[in-house]
Length: 77
View 1 (spheres, rainbow, N blue to C red):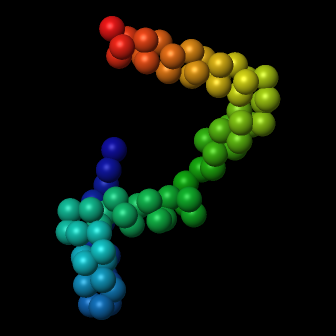
View 2: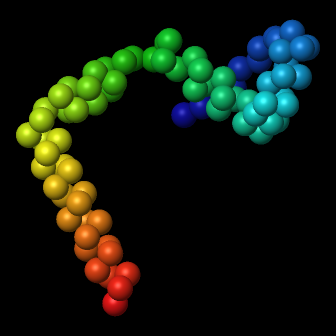
């Protein structure tokens, strides 16, 4: 769920933001910048733990390679 918020920016900052990301993308751009500083980082910790599991990563790589091979086979048919 999103919540609406009003913020005040210096005019030069607003103009730079507008030129850089565009009017309809400002909110997402700001959210992406702020999120790592205010949101719970447990998801990041979970991904780091999964990446550290070498056996799981090897199985995932094997699965991805098999899937890519299957897709290549389908494309040649």
